[in-house]
Length: 358
Image (cartoon, rainbow, N blue to C red):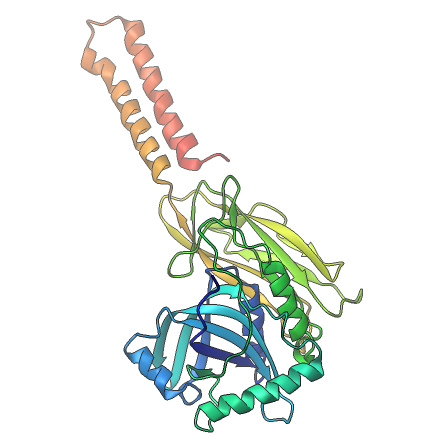
């Protein structure tokens, strides 16, 4: 069955470069990751602010859209992605929403050319303003139906095969606008364990990896206007302390559409640590919005490794002390053998297990 109709609309615009880059990040992040949208309170419909106060907004299904040229006769509007409200708060005259990314919008029935998109944008914004008492609110719970389809919701462990096509459909339409005409769009697949299936994000939008788990991150990219001029690099970066890239951390782009795989390797730690991974393009063009999407990664100390180390340490210490406990009544070679075995276990505990497979 398709997902329920969204009950909240979040618009991000071309008013500032950061707002446009928020749309690129929302399009890029994997399912379950969280992005933050900020609005001045005057741009959030009062009924939505009231639902923030009583926390009823949490969990509501939303749709994120890009809007540009709002004050012109031909505004540009493209629905980008579905989400759910993970958290929301009012701080002074600002309202901050944390949105958990869901599926991409299916725009097969949405206009494709720039002129048709602008015609639809004018029609929709007029209706949006009308249902909000002749006020324009970029964040509202009162909005007309966008008439966009979403894919059937997945069962746990079930793959979504048409996400790439939906993502590409959104990117192609955004690229019709001058803001994104020369931009690169990226899509980060859900991280996958080196040995196993996808790694889910927790309620706070964090990826959790044990310090023994490596994860693969597949990244696809697309641009509408590829050229051979200039150096274009797709890179993956981490803090380098608790989480490292065990593959090449950058990729020289020589095509308009391709995919690449990065490997994330948690570092062996003696405590839980919070790191961050970010993926983005760098074109060194101040006039072109650059995508830089990332998410936090919780690196957990391996409980199994800790238990194994404690066991080996205790057994080693016991065997080292055993010759003294047995006394001189036992043969020397037996006591020496116990001591050697204890020293070996202590070495394994402190050198091999504590430091990991390096």
